[in-house]
Length: 122
Image (tube, rainbow, N blue to C red; front, side, top):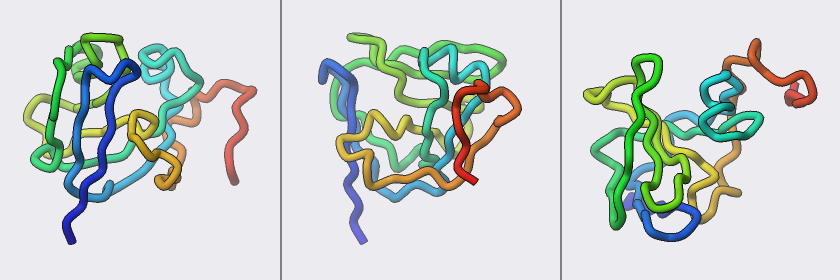
């Protein structure tokens, strides 16, 4: 099956294509994700690095706590997360997809850092 899932940043300067379905979908409540996104949590999908194609624009990277967070240089939209530059799996922000509504999170992670007013789905 040939998969083409597309996404990009707020202003449209960065566009990417994913060539597989995500391995895992998770809501991350960790403090670092909250700070990096300025949101109460971030929904991520795990994709193999070689299945992510950058179509246009420039991606900036910030190293923090030994990991890499990537964002659109043009507008700052958070896009990718890597445990290290050589890792096989890269997390992609589900909300940066053109059609994020078809990818529901399967699990909540780092819930010990969750803001008290964010409900968890039992």
